Length: 458
Image (tube, rainbow, N blue to C red; front, side, top):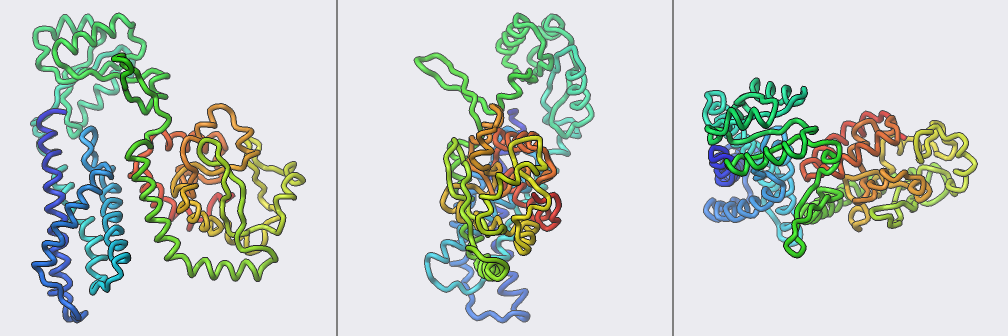
């Protein structure tokens, strides 16, 4: 990363902190000055004590921002930052709520908590937009651009070169498109210090030419990038390690590793716990209707497979008649899904009247929050399947067992049961290979309109 971008990245930490503090001060003014006539103050918090508390809380929030990936130096686009900011501010607010809850002390102003959450998101977003705008102005005026060369003989190289030339906001200055390594060496050897990066966009380049290109880049301290061939495109999570001083390339199954796994688990615990508390009256009402509609238990435990082939009991509100699983073998000949191991039947006679409503509204899935809290499932992940369905997986489908299954997922927000099993598997595998906390949050937000639309429900 060039010095210009490093300066802008370094500014983000103090800027976010400043914006968080300003949002807290604004909320204090809003509550104890602007809204006093509408809502009288019962207990006013002294500003001095409030301000010191803000400084401490928002220092902790910066750690949440770091874990959310808001200071990733490799790639920063506001469209991707937006959801991460919302997630980080929401998680920070949840931590405050949990702290107050476990302290068991009365807090005088719920308004400050709610308004603080909203204003922190608005203020931090405004700060980020301001930085991106200033950076874009610099780029469009030709300042701070990183000089880059594209090398390759096919259309891919031309596309990359044209894309860079027509979008100065990317922060790159195109030095041209070269066909061969020999052309590069002949034309640029004496002025190689003008090149910052070279993109090798020809996956069919010979091994000898690739070695020459890498040697040229090493000699002149140029960043070397390349477009992947078919094998490398599959290796989306690559790391290196050494054994006995020998470098080893590690192709990981998922980006969800290390701190990512810890953060995702905390995300699951917080949101499932809060969800169960908020939805407890809904559980009671649904339970009453289920009992009135048909005989049998309110909840059912269904055997499913989770990560690494482990079995677990998935909890659901009962939407079928009692002992429905015993009827499945007889009904299997009516399976309308011929593309994979899953069973689907439009007018399944096992489903009760109220059960049909539960499924249409996806309310039968709510008890899976208990599975999430127990650590058997995640809020976001591939759909959990039955043992007999998993037994029919093809080899490439088994990658679905890399991580915990989820209540919702990328496939559920991209077509639900309308998708073929192969399409569903591809989407879930893409999620596994490209996981991020921001990605989880985007899927969670997209789930809401999908559920309310009630389309393509299995």
